[in-house]
Image 1 (cartoon, rainbow, N blue to C red):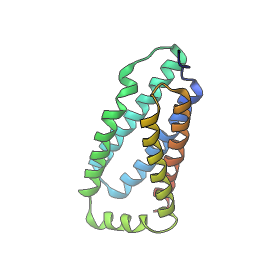
Image 2: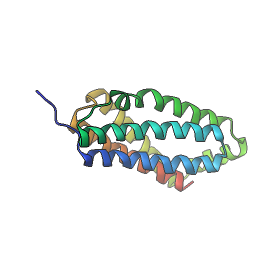
Image 3: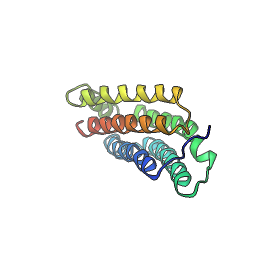
Length: 157
């Protein structure tokens, strides 16, 4: 049984969490003043943009570039590791201030909702094939919700 192909609409919905993440990462990077954090965020953004491009190429040209669809699994963890290191190695006073603000309302509520959304994405990744259209729609709606919540949490810091 042949699976449906990606649509431009799905690729554009996939771009929303990438955009939300980018804004949140820039806002956090500005607060932390960490070059390592920015480099990690850039790697994560490139990974997300690569997956969006992969879906657009499939939707517009019916061309599958497997590297663009699979690289997220490798670049995203590397980017997050660099962001974590950048945060840990940043100014301790600034980091402590941000962590204290993160557990205050409303930021804490948005971060909790974001974490629940990220758990939902992990479950989707285990359940759905990367080319399953229904699974992709579900995952991208959850991802947009999760990244939107994280962005709101960061903006309220």
